[in-house]
Length: 283
Image (cartoon, rainbow, N blue to C red; front, side, top):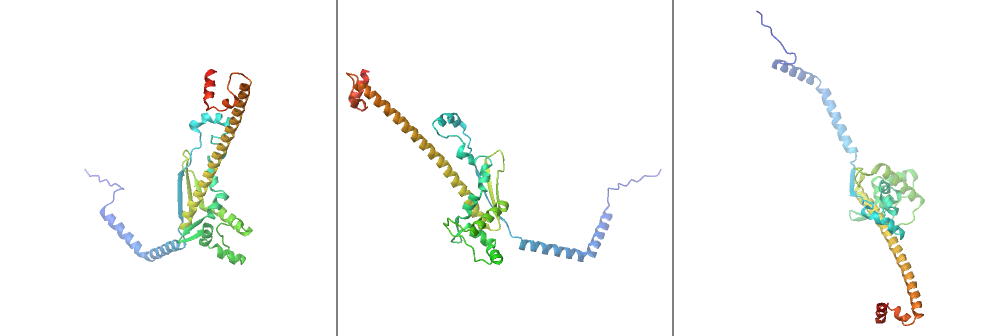
């Protein structure tokens, strides 16, 4: 009876492995020039990319936005509104609700104020807008195109020329479109993340800090203004109540003068006097 031998096509013998390795080595040796040339091209391309591609520095600020919902105070909002007092989250506080805060960070006013802020870099005070102009080599481009003298921004300048205002507008647009990102990583949470990505490490950091500080100052001023308005409203209400009370006291005092065996006007109008207390006890 003949023995049947079975061979699994998926199995490979040690001899076949050695043969395949020899064939691979022979192929690599025959193509060594191509492989070397390809490696050199790849290495040079990587070096060139690393040299010409400037690093991007990203400065990030993350913070929690105040919840402007009234919460437990809401039950008193209607009563307070009768006195002209705003205790709800509406009004000025609405600027800081929802996606409004995201747009506030990207507004021209906030970015402009941050750009015109001075920072200390290498021991020298500089405006951030001048730092931006320097590391982007904008002065050289302007002088080539328009043959103009260097354009510099000075501290504490209130009025700008038409050219300076145009430059500010262009820089604000570039920052908004390419360099600034204001997002809410989680839509369910009041967490705001501000990212500034530029090729200058110092500018990324300082501009991020100044922008957040500018918006925070605006927030504080807005809240303070609303609180001040509430205090003024309370003062007006108190003055009105005082006038009504004084009028009522004067009317009662006149009635006392016309009634015998009662306190005089002067005694009534002096609540701290002894006769006032005695008169109260007799009533």
